Image (cartoon, rainbow, N blue to C red):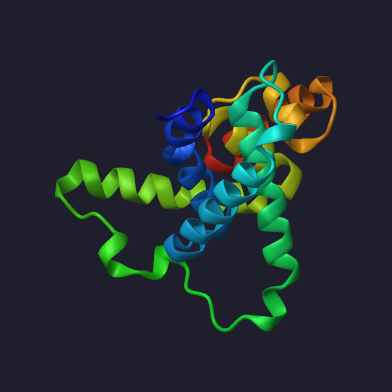
Length: 163
């Protein structure tokens, strides 16, 4: 019989994969990060407090796993960027091409932001976490999340020429 914890964990898998992919930009590494996150969450399920957000708790585990992997990156081999893989590109008419170009421009502009601003944008805008949940994931005050997000949005808009 599946518990509420397991149901919540399963429901969060697509969000975890999107966040992992946005962090590492490699489908294989993203899958590894999600697996590590699930393993750590199951092992630490007794420490999960039901009055906290499961998503925020899982995103924090994933973020910490990403930091651990990044620190060990010197021992890994060559990594491939998902944007360099032709099978990942979509060329289906003019709208798809425009969308692809805007996405690439947005991705490039996003990468020009500081790591702190990137994290806040990914968690709040892409993963739809609340400010409080994002603050919990990042280990910073809610007000800091709000100010970083405002600065990140303004900077991103400027870089994209839509301000």
